[in-house]
Length: 357
Image (tube, rainbow, N blue to C red; front, side, top):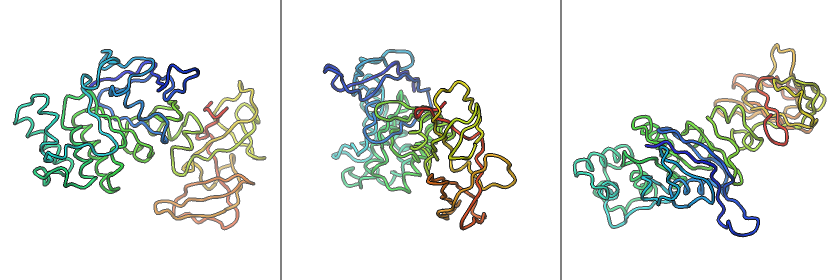
């Protein structure tokens, strides 16, 4: 396991043309030893490019990569001691499941006893014990992907295990169990795991830290709680959470007040140095509640619909033409016409030019 430093990394697949398009804009970050990271974003945002730069499949156009303070930018993949799991199964069809799992260890000269110990341990973790002597080619697509995953996990000495949407072909129930198993492996062996996904639920339930990407840019990196409560951009607010963050066009009313339509909302953000009058207010549906005895930050809205979603009700209402959504407790009864909602000032995020102030 290693600490991985990415220093001012950027990449273009056509760097020598005039005005090259960058798949990755310049960024720097550190992946700490033994942590779980998720790289999250829509298709084509640069997630896989970032992963391939770390593994050595792609050399960055600029910047350097350090493993435990050693510069590996020019090292080939095989010299980086990285395990990589791809989106679709990569297996040796002529081998048994056991032989597939053992192959990375045999190539590195491990003893027969050590190979047997590690293969059986990983097979137990991935529920492959009963298939160890079966030809790999006869397994289902999700079982084959488990073999690919197992080959990445079988080595205890890797700098990191890089996974590019590894659970795409695996059924939903098994996905949940595997994410839990990966977390257990990380906690037991302190293996650094880096997980690429476009699925926010996978990222939020798996990672210690999430790197959110959009159009080649790292727009925010932080814990799931940080990304949820204080999105750095309106894109992150929209991309993280279900439903997406409520976002409203507002006008500055004072140094700590904005107006939504004609309603004044107090906020905790200091606007004294902000010259722009038009801003956006973002707030999660989880933080909006039906008013009880609050005296300020109240909005009267027209109820559009109330959906019972099992653990909570989702209220959709309108403030004039603006749509607002609130998650409320199931036992709360909602008026069929009008409802008064409370907007807590300390949960409001204020955005100027789509970026958090």
